[in-house]
Image (tube, rainbow, N blue to C red):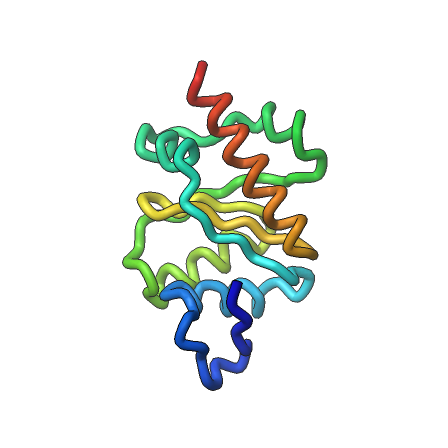
Length: 129
């Protein structure tokens, strides 16, 4: 994990190429204190097939998970990806970045990580049908 200042001041060398996306999400969601960006294999597999995790599995495992939205492909690290992902997460806790990965948010790192795990579990169950 890398702490990054929201004012876009001096960026740590280890900051992700997706730092713009993280900053835009935090700016748009004052309730969010943590973001997890990962490349979960089942989520990516379903996305390549034009499918999303079955919401029934999310309801079963993650009460209060909310909806999962898809973000079209944009170049990694681009301003377009940052603003589109942030807009998608204005009313959602998770988004799938097509051909790129997934992002989950939460009030704590534990919340955001748990949502990522639920998302991947739901994708695995959806993919195994």
